[in-house]
Amino acid sequence: MPTPQVLDELLRQLRLRGSQDATFDVQGLIDWLGRQLDAEIALVDRAGKVEAATARLAPDVLAGVQPALAQLSGGQLAATASQVGVLHVRCEALGRYVPRPVLVVSSPLPLSRESLSLASHAGAMIEVSRRARQADDLALRYQQAAARLRLAVFMALMAGELTLARRMTAGAVPPLLDAERLRIHLLRCPPSDRERLVNAYRDASGYHGRGLMVRCPVYDDHLICLLPEGHDSDGADGGLATPLRELVRDNPDYALGISAPMPLPGTARAYDQARHALAVARHTPARIADFHGRPPLAGLLPGQQALLWAGAFLEPIRTAPRLTLDITSLCLNFPRSGVARLLDVSRNTVTAHLTRAQDALGLDLQDPRCRAELALALAITDLQLSDGDAVAEPLPTPSVDSLLSTDAAITWARAFLRPLQLSTGGTVHQTLRAWIEAGTDAQRTARNLGISRATVRAHLRTAEQLLQRGLLPPGPGTHDLVHAFRIIDRAP
Image (cartoon, rainbow, N blue to C red; front, side):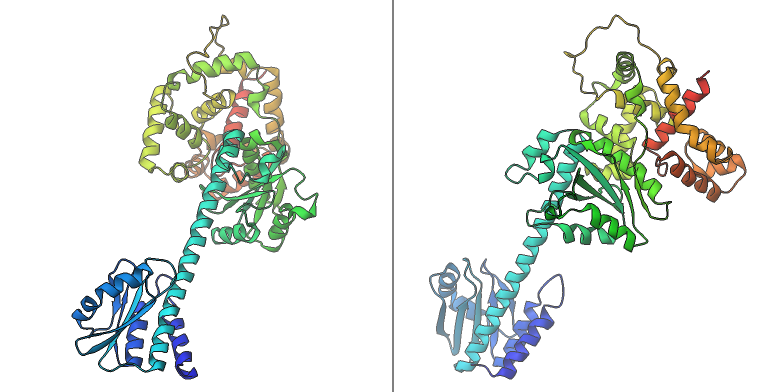
């Protein structure tokens, strides 16, 4: 048996050689063992190749014990002792799983029992260290796979595909999918904190109790938390709503936007609400805001006429590839770089699909007014019509202006803009109009108004809080603002 001092040194060497996160320094440990035993050492891996060896190992040593190496690696033998020329060679298989690596020790004189024991201990520790690292790698890959599955479930819910979400999680359906309604809590936090929070609240199934936490694939500082309505009513389920609020309370860099309760197929709408609420929360002392918005404009328009207009408006892209339609829809709500990351395509691919849709529709999608009109059409219809679904309509196709001239639309627009008119004396209202005219470019807006860019952005932040809509970056909140101005400008 090696002395305690030698074993302590072996452990020290293991700590030293294993201090690097990426790889275990097997060569360094083999060299150390060779010096301790005054012998030449080789570690033969599972494929029969030399993974590490001391510098003076004779090439014919391994050739001389080749049959024994095959038996040791295959599990027929545990250890062998033989002689190759004048050298005494000891071979020992490491680990339990075949094919096994083999530690080869050669020396001019037979090794003592203590030396053989030290070699055996060193070989065993090499294998244990490697197994531990493999286990860590497997755990990391499991966490990554679980994160991808959670994101896939979220994206299926965003598309209203509840059945698809259940099918892709067959055998391990998250409890969230059994809820009738959910709220989305959108947490803004430093990007480095997201993984820590996801892991802190994750359970053994890879989910988060009855909820689901997803790292936003578009915004690096957003953590999307889907919680069933009444999530914290039963403390036994490990509810997340209260801990999320406590995180915001205790961390000044955090903010939280919370949607209204929504049926699971309405996850996309809940997400939009949470984005608007987060824009408001960032400018409030508590840094937490619930969504208190109004019904969406698309749902207030006369149904049959709205569908007729939307169908005619979107007719040029009905036959476009599905990816073109998806990219076009996503680019109305997210920056192009975010859409590229979300769909795992290049930014050039996103631009190409967007250009195809833009040319077919005859729109300039850099213009927020064109973007808002397209977003309204997409909100009215889901673009799932096939040729067999199209029904000839005797009614003439209305114009968008006629749709936006209805009493319901005018009432919606007046209510939408009223907080601006009551609270800011017209300055923010004027900046918002100039911002839309400038294509939502803050620098151009500042130049046109003769004010600083910082003032423009301050007015936009004030407007976000008053309108309960997110305007930075442009997206659904900007679309609502464009529609409200358009309606009011044509109203009696």
